[in-house]
Image (cartoon, rainbow, N blue to C red; front, side, top):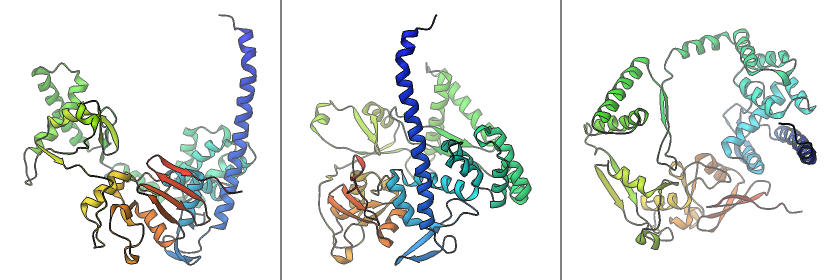
Length: 414
């Protein structure tokens, strides 16, 4: 079809604005990178990697973010930077590491970014790929990136492989041996909203062959017993059947499949109008829960936990019922942007127990080990403004509110 000239003309202003905005974002990101490097220069820790260092009256730790040849930076100062950037603790740490890797280990790449010749996202990926290399190997890669803006990723892979062979032959041999050695694993993700979970893994070839045979036989059996599901679905069901068959052996005296339900009674629960249940903090359908219970050999129904209940105990040790209440209330570490599950966190007394703070859910807060250390050993502070709502203050006075809706930075004072 011929092009609609009128339509094309009408979109020209829109495209012009989009291009202008892209250029503004690009320039802003370059300034952000330069400021992060300036921040790093002000927060270098002179000490041995991983060793505690007294800094500004507190015990701090220097982190080797960017690898060999780059300085150590303050762990607690990094927490503040990442929070100010509005990034998650792990994602923000990786982001800063890539920038510092460019600045200290890849000077040609860094210069290209600062001059606007190389897109920051491309430089980030180069820095990430070069991250594990020694300083000499990284410098070799940097020197050979004559035109980083046009480098292909396959070309970069070859360049990195050559750098490892040239400057770290022992590592090259170790990686070659590791590729044929024990890198086996199996990961099972948490359920999605459809009640399904992804599985990934790397098995011994013989084990994988046996597992595939067992799955195929069980899937065929399910079909012969009348299942109308597709072969792929039956294969997925076969894995569950194999697992339950193993659990039924009861080799260690444990029950086969145990399901624990926390029942929260509300008006919609009683009327049957609420179709939503949860696996940890993930929404799933109540029909999915019924299907799972149909295959459980043991079902435990926990009494309703009143998250507003305040029954302190006199001891410092935290009872299981208090920890469960805190986990159900907060779900994750309560540090700004941190998503570490509450069940894997320490439980902190907001007001120290030794200073009269009660061991009660109203005074207990889940903090992952990293951020628990920051609260204990640095100038990071928080206040409980109401149960489940916290106001954090960083060493330099930036503040955030953390509650069930997420992290909300407070406006800067002018």
